[in-house]
Image (cartoon, rainbow, N blue to C red; front, side, top):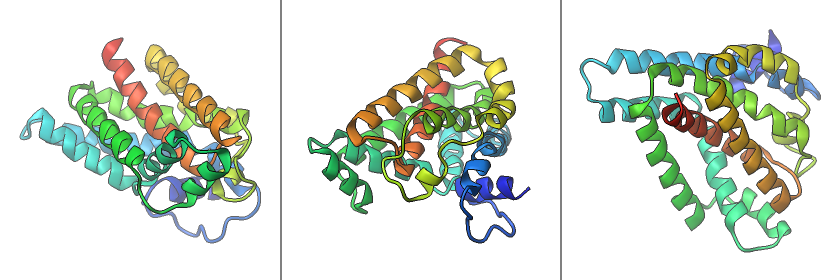
Length: 231
């Protein structure tokens, strides 16, 4: 069970007993449980949406669900999206892009991308079938495993590098219900994730933990929007 608890502690703020230090190779094993953690996140989102569906109007309900989504994941993936936006969109060379990933300051690209992303996600939540809220987190945490296996790490150190080459087969097993219930949304979402991963690889020479977080955020949003466009 340790790989699951490690995945839970890495992806959420939910309590994960006895994790401690991460040994070499453990993040690779834990990454196969990412979609299972996604189901827990999705279940919480679905429950909150259904609980608030009666008394709250759609816009306010969506704002509460989005706040829960960000809170339960510790803003981890959103932080990755903001850092990746500054690094990938800045008109600088590769070495400077990698340095920007380590910079704690938030630049104009992060503000713009973050604002657009949150507005789109809020509207998608308001309009989505509640079942999409259940499926999207599990799908996105499976989708990110493909770039982890396809592209090298931008740096040899860090949790992003240690999570590479994860258990894709186990991840697919956990994500299979989401893929089967919404195959078109999953296909379009996967295409969006792979496109961003390729773009990041070309600009950074590989992928980082921040890029993985951005891929999860994009995967969730793309899944929700595709589910709305093509039920």
